[in-house]
Amino acid sequence: MWLIVGLGNPGPKYEYTRHNIGFLTLDRLVGMSEAHPLSSSSFHGEIFKTSDTLFLKPLTFMNRSGISVQAVKNFYKVELDHIVVIHDDLDLPFGAVRFKQGGGSGGHNGLKSIDSMIGNGYLRVRMGIGKPLYKSQVVEYVLQEFSPEERASLSPWIDHTARAILELKHHTLDRVASLYSVKKPQWHMP
Image (tube, rainbow, N blue to C red; front, top):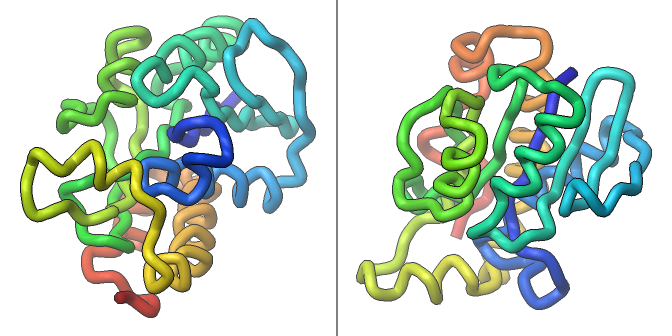
């Protein structure tokens, strides 16, 4: 069983903010996979399932994402190397996509929460959102909505990333990273 987690914050206020790129990508994956919803408040999130994959949107808010991930991991006995977490990354330019396994949180509070609950050996899909000029602007920046120019680029970027994530179930991380990593965004960019 695979567990694919998209990080974000619940509610319409946050829907198109940079911090929610994980939620947006997970929504696309659910649609592509024709997954059906499961209901259980004990998972602290929205969960969808196919025969071999669980898709999770933690509804605990970003800083407590690990609570939801741990609940699903433990209930379904998902191995750490079969967990994929999709998240925004300030250290990559807008539209970039990178893949890695394990490592530090890079200051990302959602990853910190997950690391504290299940360890850090899971797969990560890093989606670049760029960063503000000053470190003091980070919180405001990640909670801002995408600009109109950025929103025009979301669909091809999310499609590309979703296809890559589905490939992780059939190919090694190295192979997927070599085929799908995007250092310099190729779609229409601001």
